[in-house]
Length: 183
Image: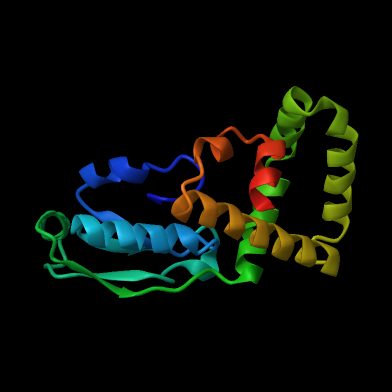
């Protein structure tokens, strides 16, 4: 994900053999728009990725590789840029929520540890939210929370990818800095 908000290669991705110009899980949209623009400016050979974390998103974005159905032939075709994007599609909100639910359920310990380290006074609130989420993960409250978070993420991505804001601010995971970028 060359221009996603976390841990992306950004301009250094020019050194890659193939460039991911579209990622189905970049629901902020601006990351993909920036990647597409960058690929065009640098004449990069592009591919798309489904970035599937739940079963229903497998194959959401596909590439055509012009080769024999043998591993060596596939690798050779990719090296020689005999690959095109066949189709692209974003994960749907329900699928994104399914992935988020999986991550939350399997990360409770790490969420606690992180909160305790960086936001110790908020630990009680985070634990309360976790309990409420586990009671009813598909409630309208969490659906609205997801949509508001996605809207905030889109604003941040636009500012970082098109308005010159420093992407390191998001990588620091400082809640105050992130909220400043939303407004």
